[in-house]
Amino acid sequence: INRTTQGWGMMDNSGKTVVPFVYNNISKYGNNKYLLQAKNKLIITLSATGKALDDKYVGQGQFFEGFARVAKRDTSGKLIWGFVNENYEEVIPCQYKSAKNYKNGQTAVLDTAWHLMNTKGEIIATLPKVVKEIGEFHHGLAWVKLSKTTFGYINTSGQFVIKPKLNKAGNFTKFGVANAALNGQSVLIDERGTPITEFGVYGNIFNIEPNGLAKVQHPRRRLYGLLNQSG
Image (cartoon, rainbow, N blue to C red):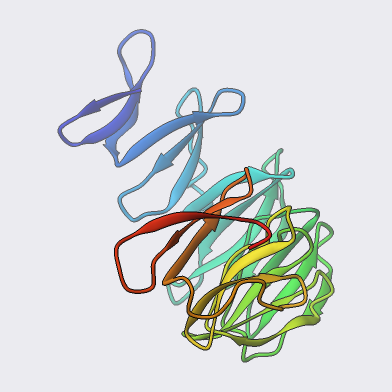
């Protein structure tokens, strides 16, 4: 892996260019595999010999649980997404407007609405069309976005467990809490959506770290402190 003024590329041991020096970034992962960050922001996977998959796909993500998102272009030029397995067999056809990474045997895909899908490509649940975006599942819950300031949470069956009444929603942690905003106020909530911090005490609550602490900001000054997972 090397870099020129034109971008990142790859050479073999003889100094022959095997990947053109036109990419924003190249990083190694897995067993002799490389990820290329192309100038169009899509990610392409290469072998160590520089063989790319973009003879068939114009974009690819990293492997999660044995599956990687891949994209083709439809007849109108728009990206359509599906999944390949680690043998690069297209096990879920490229037909979706968007697709999330697999986590705990489940993903979310978008056509006319968001769907929850298992590793066999079977639809588990279809979400209401008012859902515009969905996050990854963490500890059985995923946030969903209905508008710029309207969020809620669903479980792995696609059922709302926290109604879409929040103004902001973060991922749930192993401590069973998430940072969110309700009525314009930053709060920590439990898995029922109940605030465990008082309104107006903090101007902002940042993401909870693995040690159970979150940075918090004074509501009117640039002063900071730490909050534990119990609020």
